[in-house]
Image 1 (cartoon, one colour):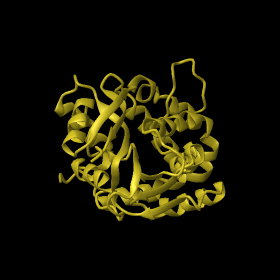
Image 2 (cartoon, one colour):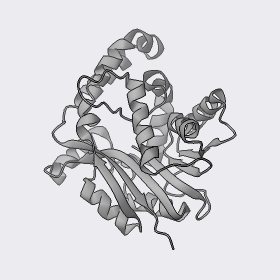
Image 3 (tube, helix red, strand yellow):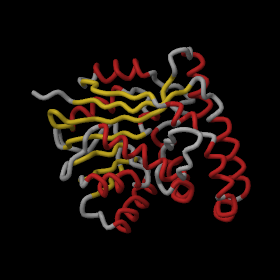
Length: 275
């Protein structure tokens, strides 16, 4: 592991520290939002729920199924999937603060009987072999130094015929490895794969890729709208977190979303083969 790559402890601390902000800023949907075009005026939070909904639809979630939400954050996607698809969800995160916040969210939503959250690492899941029907990983694998490890774990815990949905930023194919490395170092992420690379990695882990959508212009390409969200909430954010943090957040979003020609966004659906 490169000395600049965040460790599991670093990631845990980062999410411990940002859990409260994510609750205020995007109502716990700790991933990007989806807009159809510049005229789509859908609020940020509802546009983020579209990504969660698309992940659920990509793997055809059905009532009563058991779903693993790998890298579940503060629980908003898991609660949404339980409410909209009637599934049972186990959420896993390395952050103790996120687990606490997620359990509270599930309680408020009245779904605690069907949604549980545990502190754990998707590299080493505390789940039995062939115990889940579907896995969703919504912008979670960005922290995996070797993506093959969690993919192998997902394959292990899925039943034969089980489905996997991954949503994540991707490297456009014209971007060199050096350019991608710079982006990863700037934003302390461990990987940025192209869609063909994802397909290859999933195949090597034993999955059959059934569908993928490259929707970068509607997701990463719309990211500068987050600056409007900061301004909308500036007073509330300043009161809760301080003016310096709000200025840092603004600068971070402006920098992160400045590379729209280089970064895409994919929703990938794969299946563990039936025996």
